[in-house]
Image (cartoon, rainbow, N blue to C red; front, side, top):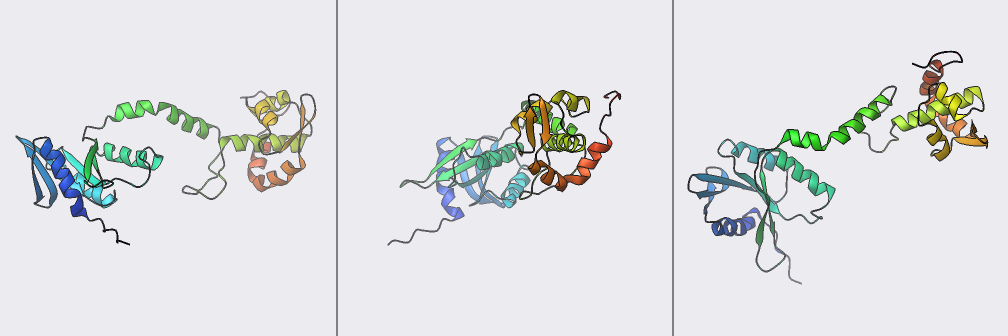
Length: 246
């Protein structure tokens, strides 16, 4: 069985040279620390070559922006899908740095270079506008929490969300006061999602004993004990009968 040739950075050079030559550029390799340069009239293009899209490559490329706005990074085409979130996120970072991106494929007999996108100024205002809804969701989530119960960077631990806090609040009130209706719970300060939380019973913490009346389940009694500090916080701040909900 013929051993597959190991891919080297120099293998990227020829297909990229062909691409820019076809665009009527004069192309040169290894010019004063630049992997490749392409020249057409007064236009100067710099291309940095690497086998992977790494931080080192991005640093190298951004340094070349001191020479020209037309800087590309070039890598072999990734093995994973180009419509994957992983690839999309990487492309966003490259665009944000105002770099161009070239991928080189070696699937056929002739290697081929493809420009994914050219270097262009990053429109931060437009990007912020497109993500307005995401920002609003973050703000809404923060407003729904009573404190910081998560450790940043955790990915294998249970995350405390505003929804779960609301469930703990309702469960602690039912555990403390006995059977209650959604209306009474809302009056005690559990919020507009109370009816939905009780109906969906996502964690299995609630039981409907009759129409419009709920109690905390045995499962709920056990599991809410894991959040005793939070439950006590809500009980301390529970709106009592006759008080005005702020």
